[in-house]
Amino acid sequence: MHATAVRNVLFLPEATGHKPQAARSLLDIGGRKVIDLTPGANNVRGLAPGVYFVREAQAQAQAQAVRKVIKLK
Image (cartoon, rainbow, N blue to C red; front, side, top):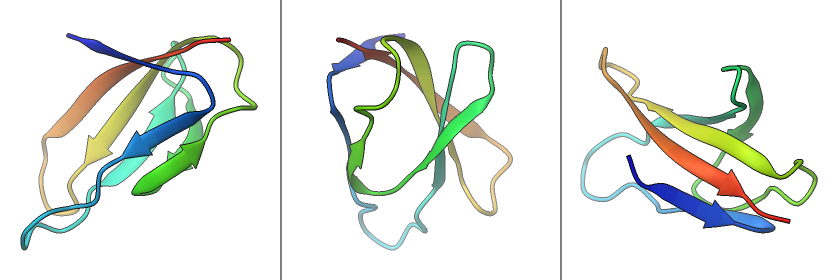
């Protein structure tokens, strides 16, 4: 799993085509939801440096995609 390193802004792309937009949450290392994410720029300036995960859940699908994010100072 590759990680994305960010400082103050976590950018998430818009949905393309006819696929519905997935619900996205940022989770801490313990699996607790920190914030809900939206397409575009997300301000993560107030978060402590560390490892987080973006969880993307499709509205009508059982599968979830997870990406690792490293928040830098």
